[in-house]
Length: 296
Image (cartoon, rainbow, N blue to C red; front, side):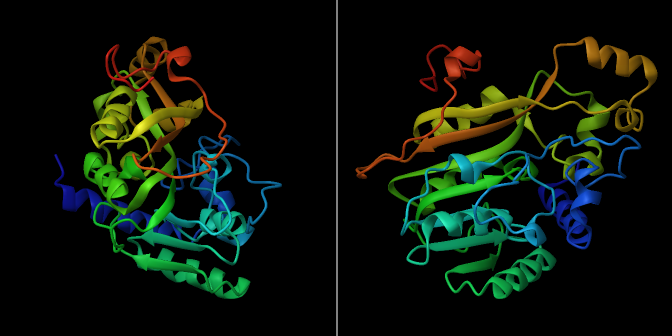
């Protein structure tokens, strides 16, 4: 079993290489981490086409949702993007918050930070900044953000409760987050979970959906809701790298599922004009943490 530092180093090394790849290469693999499949498909990412503020040069094809679309960002808000990569979601958020707001992107990969800053300079934005650091120990003061967003990043962090507690710390009272991420229902085969390549590829680092929601509730967040959920299918030519033919058959007929979800939650505290948000009721989706958890 790898240590937390070894896992982080593995992810950092992998994403340093991804920063030099194009969107097509990344989108044809598992969050850009693996050798592309010989089939043409898109495992995780959603389409940003038509999204205002979108910059194609900043889109590395690494996301698994559109958290900024659901985040209810208002003019003048301060927004933090966790795992900001080349800056894609930061620039979309900047369109929403306007010149009077502020966007802070945090990433622990120096190559990504450099790429994001170059993109920001091209756009001439002076209210979008990128800070190098771990999202489980953010280089941000308490009570800084009105909104936190993240796109397929928390699953890469070994200590997820620590990140969620950090989000609580940096949000202002009454602030909220919208986070897209990968979660599981049932257990992945061990070969998939332990391989570092799949870990950096957004799958083996994922945890159970119920645990994920419970960590959010345990940190003190309220009004937890699923805004979007979609199943993720891993093609055979990737599964074949890790599982035997018989194991693939068993995996496909089992109850294990991999999902992309976008989760919304609020920090307690008074805040006027709560955003009108698109929601998927947790209870109707059958994904409550537990009958008495209060997540639904």
